[in-house]
Image (cartoon, rainbow, N blue to C red; front, side, top):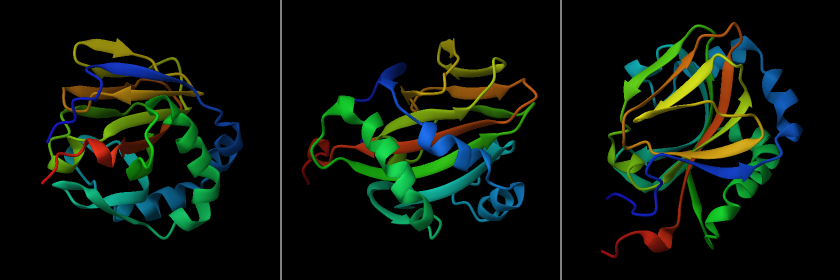
Length: 189
């Protein structure tokens, strides 16, 4: 089911203070990224140059309403949850649900191949990116436009159209990425 309230391209949700988490995220050791990345549930070809630390993920790729937390979320939730809550304020949902939460590191010189998030669990939630680190040679393409996302802002991305990212810089790009939806908007069964 496609959510009629999703953006059709890219929607800037506004400023989000990430100063409380940037240092901690940038200090994550490469060995920790490797450890968390090796068993990630979103191990798709398009993410060959991307490492993930997954905090929360859907149980079933066809259903966004049921998800589970990874053990690492326990040590991060008190720091990250306030950032997520601030980012979604423009929606005004009472009882909104975060179905997936993760950090994504696109390595220097790497790219995320062009794709559409085709599984059923991705069609309903809003897909939101908050840059934690970036450089001026990072671009994000959402059909048919190129964007540069700035640190300190949240962006909803239309994940149901072709999108990809390139990091032609010499520094890794890290985004806090999550999916969020209003259960009241789900079709009644």
